Image 1 (cartoon, rainbow, N blue to C red):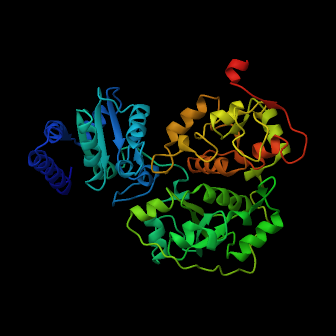
Image 2: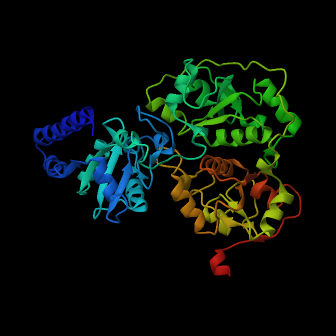
Length: 462
């Protein structure tokens, strides 16, 4: 451990002691006892214990660092191989159910009181915050570690997601618009877009609440239309791109107040052939939490002459009804994955006031989602960043979904499924697509005869 790290840790230990003795309540006295269990640990000890069942290594940094970004001057991106995550940022989320949610997170990740828990960071703050949180909950055997020491030795295994650059931290976007050259950026023309439903004057997340400086508004009505709410024609998509100054070579950064709309649009941009697409991980809230300013003036796009490629250049990224049927019929090598709530999947509700039929395509499998047609909690951390790869794959494995299969994701009209498709892309799953028509099309809601439908719990049905 370097001298700077030791000094930081010594300062934190002193701060904990001062805090404990300065208060007068019973809860403060409990903190004094708990914080005395927080220790420091060296790389040698981490290596000796990392594979032991009674030890767990926890990354407490921002989710972006865990995914692969080099933040806080750490020499290598990603996380210690085998580590799980519990970000200090989650402790600052304003959520009435935060305590219950975080208790479930601890349980899911196996962060239990009977284990030795190594908490690491790169900024000298995050690990201490999580350690204090856990100690106040009665956890002992807590150790603080500096990831910089681990990263400096190339023999120490670290893991980053294959396409981590597709999800960017707010600091990356700030550097981009400030004219810097952030990690993985090739210096080409870039555009930043705020994505939500409605025209810019009707979008509270664009003009009323404010947007990232320089960002242009995209209305989702520009890329999809009813009654199917499928993407518009390839010709219309090309006109949309040209009007917004997007070519196949434009570095395109999208975000939103809730980023689901941005994932919907970015999936279509990838289908069209835009080669460098990015999503701000965690949306507008992450920009604000980082202390960056918003602006409330509208920015107008500057059109380009041409998109620069025949649309779609990445045709297989989105599939339609016939291909969805082929995927269902290829049971050995393929899965049509339902990204809707359990209640939608088993047919208790359609999830939409304009879709009457309930159920699911016969032969599909459940891929998890959230509690209703607008949520995706099973794939997001409490701060709306992407959940970690191992937990996503574990969810899939429950239903026989594996990354080596051909996977097509669908939901009601393509929004939730687009987000999961993008996450699958980030973690490096290869043969993936969005079934654009989703339940809206399959159920016959658009006037065609409905396709084969199932209801009920498939385990009980069998």
